[in-house]
Length: 386
Image (cartoon, rainbow, N blue to C red):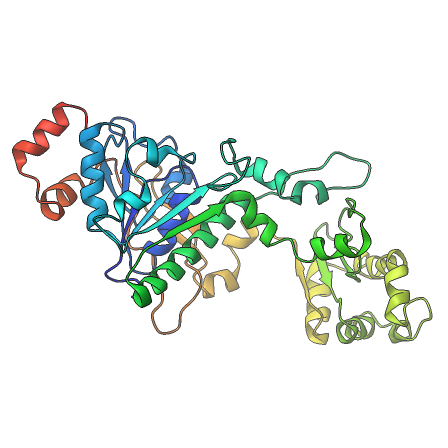
């Protein structure tokens, strides 16, 4: 697999760091999760833990204890990547600053995920997904005018940061191939969201005006809306190029709309978005979802039902691309989970195993990998280090 031979330490918790590490595990990396003895990380036992730590191994280690920090340093010496999402300065407090780890392992890549990054005036602020969404500007744009902003339905900041962090780890490993030297990957939750913001900064720079909340309407993206069907579903239609707009007009049996002065040229279409949406909505409202989908597919118009999770797990396309998996768990039996992405045609990824029991791999890591004697392991267990 692409990452065979790469060893990763996951010293993170909750979402972004474990998710980053699991993405690497799904393409062949050996991922060793480090958790506090006793209860483990704070998310352990949840469905989220089972999904976002799949494919990892688990050891228990009290990193804050001097003997634990020494063991962590030994593990870092035989690893390629360390992923963590503690508050900035935590590794340094434990005597495990990245540069000090690279004194004995110069090639170590340290991926550091935090709310606001390792530098800047806000580096010490606490940050979770919802806070990052607001700080990055996404919350301000989500919802309807005149009403309070609303949060998106997914953890966009946590999972987005995990993806960018995994990307950063691969870049740093490639750089190490060229230079022999590791480096830090500094990933802030809010920066993942901000990087996905499109042209909002450019438009503000040109106009000096903030975009307001506009519900389902995205300024300049027309026609595009969620429309109610006759049988009680919602259908998204997104025909925002001139060619797709023409196909849509033909599909609904109104080709004259293509040259209607309300909608031609395209600047007129943008101004009269409410009118074209009303016409499309009336056509959809008189037909079932299946009828609408069949007609729009036949004419090549981008459209789909607004899926629920129930729709997704029963959908043949998701199934054909292995995007709904059944994975065992330690606490919840068999769980439905998203599949592995991206799909590589030559060396595809896979879920190597369920999420681990707490300390499930202590013997394999401490005895087999690090070479600790049984008496030494027993002493560390008695002292609460392991």
